[in-house]
Image (cartoon, rainbow, N blue to C red):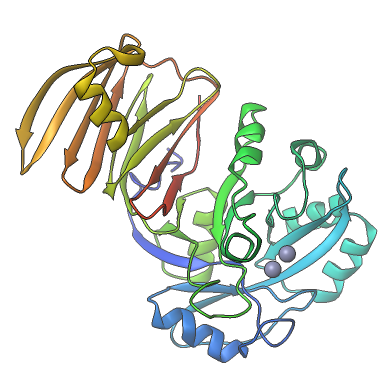
Length: 333
Ligand SMILES: [Zn+2]
Ligand SMILES: [Zn+2]
């Protein structure tokens, strides 16, 4: 059977960033220093994606994926599409296709690497702009530079609108680093499950969506089966299960503290609680469905849902006490 769940696929995890700039365009570090910077933070792979330029470099310390960032086309609000082209070889062909049209560029990339649509929110892209194009593997749902500089880092609404339209695209967290000031990097990354720690092994896994995106929290397990799911993660303050409108689920330590004092509020009822491994295990009924979660003083670390009528897709998003997030890729139903 084809692997679709990174948490149930054999292999090892690789952490990396696929959007970064060097002195070869408008970044402040040389390609070598940029690679040293990321390897010093324990990254396993990196794509140098200078504007319009394929930066050639090599490193003993991490796996380098060749990449370029290209500007092409116009959005309905007058912005441009920025396309991060990954695992590419031919700078001239990329520039030529980008000049032609964004769709020509994406069609080329479908056969010669893959495309991620960069920072939709920052680019003034609407959902319609993303529905108007095809042949991209994913979008940046989080971009550190856009977040810390102009507060436009998150594009999860674009993502959910695409997923609701059953456009299966993956969610990438990236840095888009220019300064390497510990503000614009390291902030967003993906963790990819690979069978083989090589460029081809890594690309194969990314193309299959065998990864999750993060700005901090670690997802240890996520599985879905017939209207139920189970997930385990590093301790967080809030757990969101996102699906079509009206069918998702959210629990946070704040909500739990209110529900404990006001049973039955908004149709959430605590059925029973128990002590387990130094924490509390809570059985709750939410709109007639069953939810189990584990809590400790520092937050939530486990959730199991049963009998939910998720529609179209379902994905997990968690937020820790510092507001840092992690996102699984969607499961399509
Ligand atoms: Zn850009
Ligand atoms: Zn960029």
